Length: 489
Image (cartoon, rainbow, N blue to C red):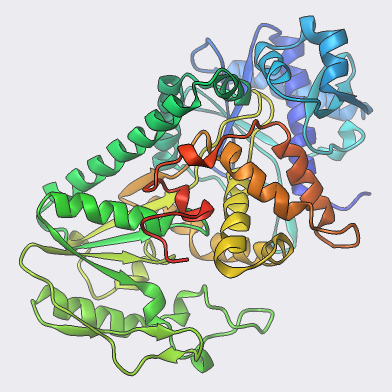
């Protein structure tokens, strides 16, 4: 039996799902949307809720397909071949993609008499899929496949990310405002010379949302502390500073604190299971000193905020004096901002927790999603090359450790947030594309990251290039491509 691959498993199960739906409800237009509730949220275009009886028929048909151990045939085409031979038979979202890109490669997969394409590899027959869950949710349904959890292959536990689901709905409305549904429509807007207006609208929507967040905080007079948390390359620095400006415009006086300055001396940093310093653990922070400082600030006392020297791994001898005015408010930025144990000595009535991340991205088409973690990876590759002189290979080398830390220290707490902000920009991959490609093509064939680099390059080939000169200086994207007002390179 081939080694378990959760991504390959998910995509193979999706093909079986799509085939089952096509057999029973051929008129349905299935759209694979966002990761949600430890699964994938799926809707049916031009239709209301999906009933339990309908899902039961789909499950039954999927089980039949799996039991038959049907072969999955893989065929390789490029977009020119498909356009010449099959364009009249493809979905509208795929048609638009084919008409707005150069010659790109496709993996066409055939299961029985059903064909569709995926941008990644699938298993060779249906027998590899023996676990899945499908259940009704909101206006569609959740589709779950197994993951390897602590060495055991199992379906992830049931959760309900209600706050994230709300963000996804808002994102769909934003896309409607910008008149983009999938990548093909974005490419068309770009090719027709209308991308500047889309960028301005997208950035205006960000500004409007940040202003609303500031208004919500100001309305609650008890709030004196704002914590901002999110995974790597979410845009925390830019968001924090833009929120600060909104609060200043409302005549509040924000004070900024970074959790990085509360690291313990390097020799006291705890070790992870691999025996390496775990800087992403909350145990690596001096939370006792943080709480002492915050209590004193809330009482109107002056305190000395530490400054951490990452070169020496110790605090600098002299910190920065800080005193909170009567109309002051504290903004704390760091990955543990949603963890209740961070501020154990502070009443939650004084705290507003904000979770930010790159939460959504345009689908390539209705059956192929762009993982938001991939978008953050692209952001990180570009920023690392600019600010740290890291090449793409170094960024990819550390990425799995970064993701592991996020899964342990950030994602379990995201529903603790009072406010969630999606830092994604519909147009950003087109802007990131040239810089990422320059870095990825440097990775040699003998590198352990060569296959990943090739996969990313293939996905980038679907996107048309968007000039970075159209991106406003205050944009979150500028934090990654350079030229930001708020980021120290």
